[in-house]
Structure formats: structure tokens, C-alpha cells
Image (cartoon, rainbow, N blue to C red; front, top):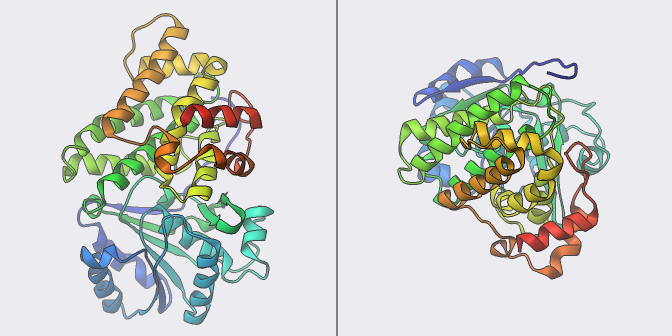
Amino acid sequence: MLGNFSYYNPTKLYFGSESLNYLNNELPKYGKNVLLVYGGGSIKKNGIYDEIINILKANNKNVFEDYGVMPNPTIEKLYEGCRRLLDAKADLILAVGGGSVVDYAKALSVSAYSKEDPWQKYYIEFKEPDNKIVPVGVVLTMVGTGSEMNGGAVITNPKENLKIGHVFGEDVFPKFAILNPKYTYSVPHYQMIAGIFDTMSHILEQYLSGDDDNTSDYIMEGLMRSLIHSSLIAVKEPENYEARSNIMWIATWALNTLVAKGKPTDWEVHMIGQAIGAVTNATHGMTLSAVSIPYYKLIMPYGLKQFAKLGRNVFNIAKKDDNEAAKLAIDSLNKWMKEIGVVLNISELGVTRSMFDKIVDATFLNESGYKKLTRKDIYAILEDSL
């Protein structure tokens, strides 16, 4: 492994079908006022809301609510949440939902007491918090983002056609996260497969970088093999506990900072996907799936050795020639994507050529991948994705 690094993850995980019971262990650590953050109300239909409210009341908490968090949380919603949090004098933010709800909760935790505009401070200038941070706890109901065990918080500014993620430090990581695989059963099929691909994309963004013999690669290869296996079961049997529990666990470890150690990482697929999301408001995982194959075809010659390793160690391609093994790796990835049914073209997300300029303008160009992309490259990827 190359580089020098430290590793610490402060989030405590509770996993399994009875994991919500452990909320009773965590609540006494915080003050009386809890801000319950959730999305459009599905947790009320499936009974999770009532379970959580009963536990909060049993622990003598004053419950305040911030609901209606959208799939791509906006800066206006964040401003609204800040007002709710301050009015409640919340001692804990309890996020119940998927990655968007958790991302929003973390953004809220650092923004409410900021003396500066949070969009400008955190998403334009990328400053770190210098004010009070309200602790966040999580009850996860949809998997894919890994947000339950990291410091990432993505917020969208529709007026500026920008969707930007800020990866905060360990002080912003959720203090605890409760992961019950059964809570993911009610997630619509489209959202389930989007989350599965989001997980795969997180792993690939880290795996397809560098070319040294890296222990992190071996871990990621195991995660990818397990994800492919379990996803093919889950799309046919959505309530297969073994498959859904594996997917939930993989999603967490895909982006809790562990497998990034010793890796330069890439993240250009996410930059393009987030730009598409900012313009179309499309589902995040599908914006990634729609551009991944064209992107990997473009950069494959520059990271040939690693792509060949992906083919041999994940897709069982027994080819001695690196070029052939690398090409077959992309073909195999594409085949799996078709099998689970994710979006493969940006036109399915409503993208037209007339939107290309806005998407390109909103795409951050990273320097850590195998090839530093130009604006011309982004146009080519969009054209190939159409």
C-alpha cells in the first residue's frame, strides 16, 4: 500500500432485525429535545414512524419534526430545517430514511448555528465547521449512499443548477446508525436497484484508481463479488433477508472511508452524475449508471492493469492479455447492470442535447483519476450516454 494515512470511524452501528431496540441505549446520551427528520411519509405507512415515536416517548423526549426531505435535498429545504432546529433547540437530530435524509441531517447539523450562509460556506468555499454541531443519529430505511457511516452531505441548489457534496470530518459523522434490513423491503424496486448501483459505483470509484498491490483492492473485490451475487437474488426476491442484509452491509462498507485508504480514488462518475441530477432531479443511482460504461470505456486505456484485475478477480475472466481482460470487465459490468435493470442511457432520465452545456458547466473535473477529463471529454461521455 502506498501513502500515509490515519483511520478512525466514530459511528457506532447496530445491525439486524431487532436493531431498533438499541435506540434505547443511545437516547439517554442526549438532551430532551429531538428533531425527527424524515422524507415524504412512507415511514408512517410501513409502521416505522410509530415504532420510533413510542421509543422516543418511552425515553421522555420532546419530539419535534422536520419532514418532507426530498430525494435531492435543496438549499431552501436546508434553510427551512435550520429554522425548525433552532426553534426546537434540538439536542439530537434523528434521521429516519435513506441517503438523502441522512445527508440533509448532517448538513443541518453544521448549518443551523453557522453565522455564515451554509451554501456559500460549505458548498462553494468548502470551509469546515467552526460553530456548534448538533449530533446526528440514523435509522436507515434505504441503502446505497453509505451516508450512515461517513461525513458526506450532498445538497442541491436548483437555481444555480448545482448539486454539490461536502465531505465533512469525523465530528459530523453520525454518532450511531441503526440498520434493520427488513426496513428496506418496502422500498420501490426502482429505488432498490438505484441504491444497489450507487453502492457498486462507490466501490468502483475507489477501486479503479492507482496500480499498486493494495490490500484495499482485495477488500473491494470481495464486496463487489458479494454485491453482484446478492443483487441478482434481491431483484427476484425483494424480501430475501439474506440478500438484503448483505446488500445493506456492503453499502455501508463501500463508503465508510475504510477501502479508500491507500487509494487516490476517482469520483468523476459521481461528478457527472450529480451535474445531471442538478439539471434533471433524476434519481442519483440512475444518473451514475447512465454514464458509467461510456466513462469507463474512455479511461480504461489509462488504467489498463486495474481494469484487467477487475475482470479477473471480480468477473472471473481467465485472460492473460490485459487489454482483452479489461474490455471484458467493462462488458461484464454492463451485462450485470442490464440484469438488475438500471438505467443505461441519460435520455431515459430526460436529458436532451440542449441540456449538455448546463451539465458540463456543473461538472467538477477531478485530477485523481487515470485521466484528467476536459470539457470536451464530458461532452463525449454525454453523447455516448444518450
